[in-house]
Image (cartoon, rainbow, N blue to C red; front, side):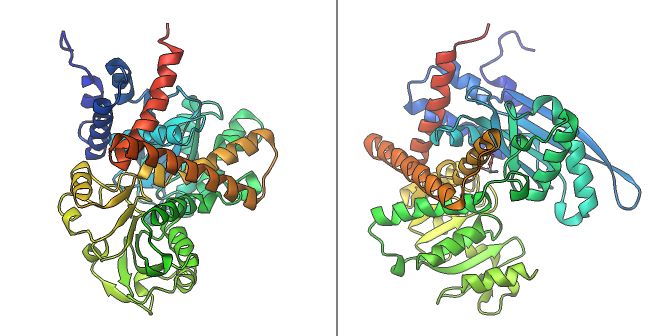
Length: 429
Ligand code: GLU
């Protein structure tokens, strides 16, 4: 170790290889420039509190043993249990998980939830694994991260490549270890196990709450408004459905297997039935197939990336032809693209605000599990709408007052909440 390590070298050495982590750090640096937060507090926030890397050996269907690498990163533990999804995807690495954990902290801060940020992941391709392999992988991962999880310590939820069944296996494994049913160890579980009505739809519904506020502010009428949605999973499919219900024409949709377009508007209920029958989006008859690269650049009023991070970059950002960018995914826009879109006058609803409906409903689920007192779906949806709408207006008001982009305003609110808690609590010992 050098005699005089420069500030934040520690985190850089561990995570620097990840462009997603670099993105999260660049954002934090931008916030530090516009806020009065003491530099030492910013420095504490620049590196995750705790990162665990585990080797997960499991028996595959062919009898062989295969080792997978898993991660759990807790960005902070200051504001309450750390909270965040678990993703299964081939590209998952420590830096990506650390960036996503940091974004969860700011997201919970904006929403005023009593949580800190965390994220987990396993580098694997769930599409190529059997149900048995996925169950063994999930249970063994849970066992390996057991020392750092708990209903008051760290609570997981679904993310890319995981679902309510994954959460059920985690809940069961944890419950077997502690000797009693512990539904509050995860959120996004099946309803029968203490899941929250409306949780699955909550991220998409929250995205649409923000879109509704934005189109009202911009004086756009839903009937003249068109949308393009990237991703047709948990988030994108619900966004498309909720937009269609409000009379907004969804003219193009795509997922990782292909993209389709119909300028007259895609029949979303029919597309949902098509996908529910096990068919691919790209094989939907009443629309034309388009090259994937054309999806994001399709002229529309509202573009909703709801799949992966870093899909809008310096190359395609100048070609985007949308009025509003509503970020359903985490980190879909690189900082270079962000500058280009701001210069082009695109109205950005940033990820940590736009997709915060998921963790907000997770908070409702955790509260219900702790109290063993359950809400109906109407109560969940109403409370979600109320919290999303007020968060949107808090961010918007700061953006207008300080004349800063919506993303910087959202980040500032999130970072400031955590920073103030750190300052108030002081440094131990
Ligand atoms: N994975 C979701 C997200 O990125 C939800 C996290 C949660 O509910 O804890 O916000």
